[in-house]
Image (cartoon, helix red, strand yellow):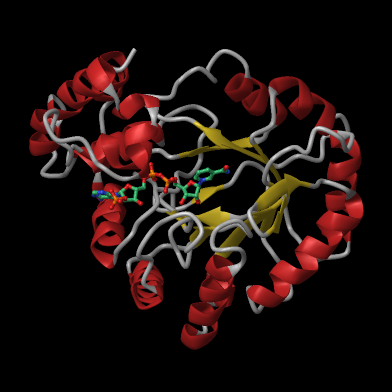
Length: 310
Ligand code: NAP
């Protein structure tokens, strides 16, 4: 696998395996988050060569960004890494709404800069469309922040195809992030080809299908946490997916690696995808995921893995 790649045409160079930071300090999303484990996971990520961190306000209502800022300040590694973060959510007690208004995005960038303890954000995304602000106006606000040097690249996440086209009418969008993995296909027909055509980098989120594609869950023993509500973790669908995942063990053995690394190495070969951002809850998971950098699959092997999940 290549050692470094450019994210689309942004000029941002990263290792092709980044780090999804939605568990870091994310007390609002996961139970029993231990911030010391979050800090140590970030330190180990840096030591293992992670140079691309994907955060968001919504991950701990700013706590993920704060912990990343803290560890980068402690290690003096800010200039070695590419920082991505996102905003759109407005959280008032248990009420969550979305905002893409230019004033909101401008304030969000300023607040994220403080939490991340930095004077520039490499990649700033609108996390979700608010359905109200014209998408090109929202992106126009980010373009002004880019020209002001506060952000270096513009991202959109969770936008429909139509909203994405509108948002990118001036060609300002650098990166699109959306849900996509071997078990959540469906963007190959429109969104990913559009990104390729426009020189936009496509970053798939939940590349391990929230752990389902690591091979650690037995068909007879599905996880009992938030995942049990998700469609892929239910009934026959879950049993079928675990059987397919288990069948990757032979290929993993041939490469002296893990099923998770085979899945990530396959995902990175998709045209339009420059980098993947698996999440990790522990230093061990980061170490394990970074071993993907040592895996190079043949074209036939990639096709074999993708065909399994068609
Ligand atoms: P994921 O990468 O598919 O799965 C991550 C989870 O799988 C971990 O939290 C861990 O959970 C388990 N895991 C990871 N590595 C493992 C390993 N080597 N062995 C065994 N288990 C392992 O899902 P994700 O973290 O939700 O998504 C990745 C990133 O995408 C996020 O961190 C975030 O940055 C981004 N994201 C963005 C959006 C958006 O709206 N833009 C939405 C979701 C995610 P357990 O230990 O609990 O099994």
